Length: 341
Image (cartoon, rainbow, N blue to C red):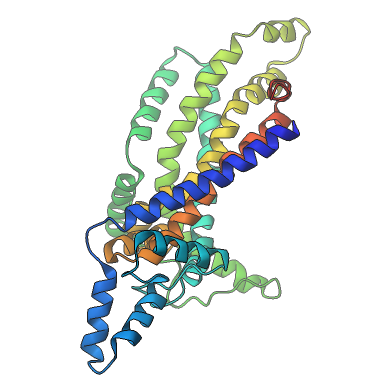
C-alpha cells in the first residue's frame, strides 16, 4: 500500500511539471509578443534609456529575457518558481503572486458554495428520480437534467443577468461587493463581518446560481444511474426481509452506496471549478482568478497566464490525488483491491 502512495505522489508531481512545461512553450508560440510591445512603450516614454536598461526592465517584467532561446527562458522561469517568484504582471504592473492571492479567495468563495449546492440538489433529485423510475416525474426530471447539463453555464449566467439583474433589478450584475461597503472579516466585529459577507453573497448570487443550475443536472443524472443499479442488488431484498424500514434502507444502503462513485467526481470537480469559473467570472465582471485569466489572455500577459494556469493545474492534480488516496478509506472494497498494488 505504501508503494501505491509513493507512485501516486510521483505521478502527481510529474503531471504538474509536464503540464507547466507544455503550457510554457505553447503560450510563447501564440501570436503577438508582449515583450516587443513593452519594449516599444519604454522607448517611447524614455527615449534616452539605454538598451541594457531596457533589457533589464523587460527581463524583470517577464521574469525571463525574451531574446534568449526558449529553453534558457524556461530554465530561468523554473528557477524563479523554485524561489517562489511567479514574475510581474505585464498588464497590471504588480507581482503575479499578489494578484492571485487577492483573486483566489473570491473564486473559492463562489465555487465552493456553488459546488456544495449543486451536489446536494443533484444527489437529492437523482435519488428521487431513481425511486420513481419510469414515472412522469422521472421522465420530466431526466429531460430537464439532460437539458441543463448540456447548456454552458455562462449562457445561463447571461440569461439571469438580463432577467433578474436588468429587467427586475433584484440582483447586482457585477463586482465583489457594494462600493459603499467596507470589507470586514474580524471576529471582533461580528455585525460588520456579517454585513460584509451578506453583501458579498448577494453580489455573487447570480454567478453561483448559474454554476449550480448547470452542474446540478449532471449530479442528478449520475445519482439516478447509481441508485437504480443499487436498487437492483440482492442485499436490499435481504434488508427488507430483516424488517428494516424503507427510510433506513434508502439512507444507509441505497444513498450511501449510490453516492460513493460520485466521491471521486466531486473531488475532481473541486479542482476543475477554478477553470470552470473562467468565462463565468468574465460575464459577471467578478474579479476572481478566471476573470484575470481572460484579461491575461487578451493582453498576452505571459507571467499572469502562467501563474493562474499553474494554480489551476495544481488544484486539479490535488483533487485527483486526494481522491486516489482516500477512496479506499471510505469504500473498503476499493481498499481491498488497492492492496494488490
